[in-house]
Image (tube, rainbow, N blue to C red; front, side, top):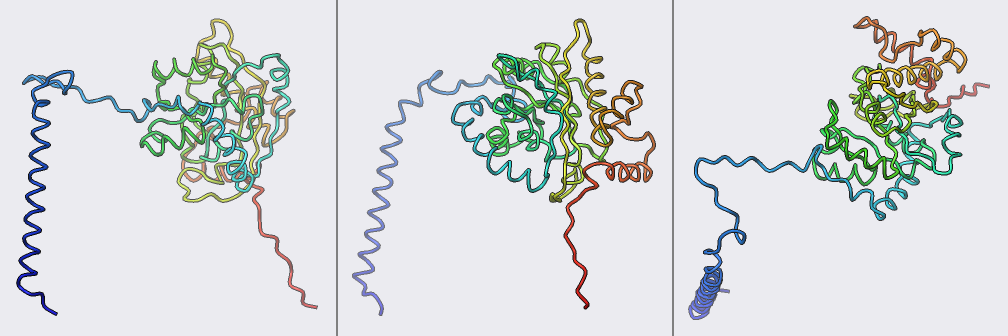
Length: 341
């Protein structure tokens, strides 16, 4: 049914009146703000003289990501629930860990005030971090900070916030620990927080280990806290670099005896001692304690970095190496012979 002419004219008139009222409101707002346009600094952003180049604002991502809030009481309570619930369940299902060597930390635990320590494990997988969070014993587990790669975990606001809240991650540069990061980590240790630092700097690209960087040794030298060497076996075949999804398997976490910095010992030498200790623990994980200690005394423990040759022979050696450890004991489906009788 068509509208009559008077009705259409009435609608047009209402639209015109509404537009006129909108223009009047806009004019009133502009008139009210007009005095503010004449105000200068500090009410308005200062003008920039011609020819001057203003440096860009410092990024708040990466190594500059603020994580202090993640160590507040509400964040700690949330993280405790996550660690004892979903994270522990994930580790059990995916990694099925066997934990060895906790007795080597008994002397530290018996102290009236157990000191903060630096855990230095090898690194083959993203599974290593939740595995360490659940494997580290108390009193250090509830006061644990994870040193995480700033360019990977803190490259976006959402990812950095999740890493800080769920893992208590702290951003560090993979290659060189800045003075700012070093000072902040020292303050954390002074406040009783223990650290997990992966000395390799990143996950293994080919399944073998990488040379250790000196971050853990440097911090231990500056703070005079012990370093706990740790070897993790089996995570590389569960969710190694390049894998799209985890493949459940078995793992083994071997804790070593505390290593203390020696007076006047350089960071390089202390770092070499830490790498040698983790190498011996890796040999122990694949053989036994006595064999690994005999080889350590002779300096003949198999290197974490694998054989010197490259190509297919290196991959072949890796397959044989994994058969000796937990990676060679994958969960397989139980099969039954058919009943033919």
